[in-house]
Length: 383
Image (cartoon, rainbow, N blue to C red):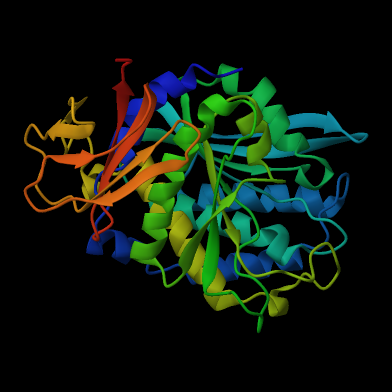
């Protein structure tokens, strides 16, 4: 189990909650998101990608060729034996300034059809993110992973978690999962997207970290796409083995119901490509932000110093900003399961709000309408 990761994730979360304002340089980097549709078209042409099939092997080869074409050289085929066949996860490393790393993952196997939506869309969004990052300096190392065996119970991602991660240098800070993006052409709800988080799934120690990261992901969706983010729980995809091992996860998943899943009709003409392009932009923005690209978001140095927090005798939560900009307009107090206990506005120039909570450990989130926020732990001692 990787419970210790949550002690290390604090620094990552602090950086991830910075720079949550629109940046035209990030927007420009996402301009070519329509290229992801061309990846989808090729994915469809590669056929039904079931275990042991020549189509699955051909798709693995195509993925390697794509990454090589982008300029990556540190590529491994992580082979595992399952269901009577040797199968391969494709694992691509982009070195950062430090070995601690982020995983951006998607599965490339399909069930009973070419699987353009499930999950050519996730694969294509992963390729788009990889293409964006290849020539950019990142603070964190990034691993792009395309898993086999998802449709048969997350076999590929489970193999990565329990047989590969321990051999990688550094610590896994976050796993971002991309699965089924875009929705059904002509369907309803294609203007929304689920931002998925860990909600009360054992082990519970990584739940709150997942919630904070997913808040940031939702903000990125608002800033750089036309989609409306909807928070949802993570379930039934390749982030599950990571979550079960105690790692912090988040993910993107379409809001619209896709009726052609696991059928021969899961094809390009059934996918809402306009919605998919926006989802690919979201994946690219997440890659830039969570990998921490100094060129775009400059997060090597702390933007907001630690806020000194305390409770006074009048049950008021008080703070000393220590140089923090005076622009926060609201405050939330959350317990460690993510429930919001206090949600209140902050008067201009104020340095306190009235609360009434029992002793314990909480998270305080300052935010403003621009989408910026700062989250910090608060311990309320017993009287």
